[in-house]
Length: 219
Image (tube, rainbow, N blue to C red; front, side):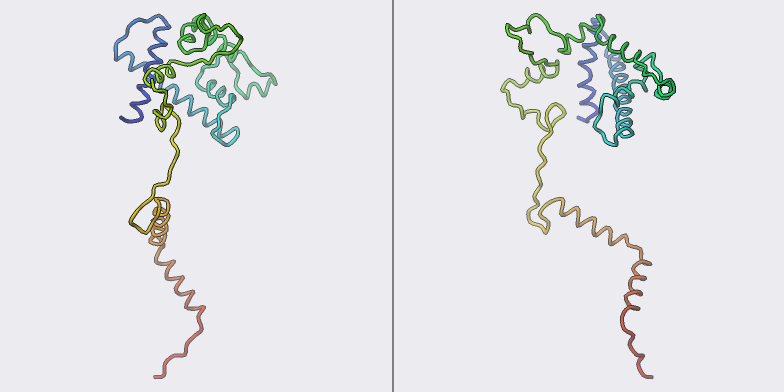
């Protein structure tokens, strides 16, 4: 199974939950695939713009809320909103788009999808003592359902778990002890083979000129 297939399969349940929360109870597979593809393209565009802004703002790929906000503004999610140049000219920060986006996300129309995502508290989660309960989304609940033994390393090294620890691969029966040593040797050989003959000839001539001159043999 390719990575695109895995990510598409993981994106399908959230889209189904969003459609259900919006009031739809059934849909055709072709319609669902189209909506999933549109959502994937939108998320890819948003992630790509966030990465570009991160590189421009602080020269790394550690995203900040400012990078994501600028990406949301690029894709038209924050409206009405002045551009950064307009804010610089007027000297005022325009918060209308951000406030409207937050209000929309916390509005009544998204109450059901917030409940499905585990972002709202229900009566069952209210405890007798004032201790914040750990909120879990549907994916975490699904992973627990299929992992009844409680072993956290079952999904390790996959897109559903934590990254696996990298261990060096030892090569037995050869002159190299690891793949890294072998790759270094291959690069060194390739570098020598790519040296142009003219450079080799000039090196030979320079070494010959630097050596002491020998007298010509008698005729």
